[in-house]
Length: 217
Image (tube, rainbow, N blue to C red):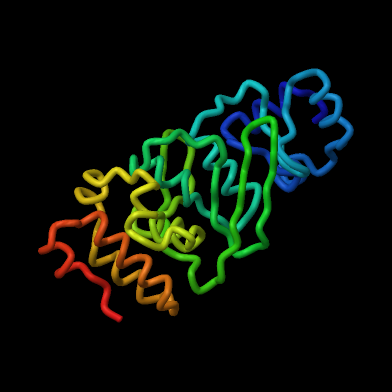
């Protein structure tokens, strides 16, 4: 197998193609073909060892799936997840992820991918989303907020948090506060819990909400 037609037919349903995938399907594959096909415009290199077909459709979901694949283990979170859930109004121009591996950034022809390192004990709270032939791991609503504030702890006060322009109504209507509080128990950091308390006070600014949803020390 040395033709682009065979290659494309084999991997037409792959959101991204790894060197391992290629060797598994075609043990005698000549790697110089990858260089040739890039020059001819048939494929694009994402990062070392990962490629896509140039004919592949690239959108938010495919970028999320690619992000999961090229740096494992990881899941989509931070600004990317907040925007996905309509918790923030701004468009994002980088695919942000959480990983137990070291912090990394890839600027690629496909998208810009950033990975923030987190301790393994906090690598949880994500779900798998299926869309057509794609699937990707993304923080659920509760963990996306916790991840964001965990990595942006300079937003300490309610006034600081107000500057983030959270979609208050969307968060109020969709956030599972029981799950949120259960997740927070896994963070052994009182200063972080104070930030979360300020966040809840800002989102649920009515006094009744403040009293009932305050994080206990």
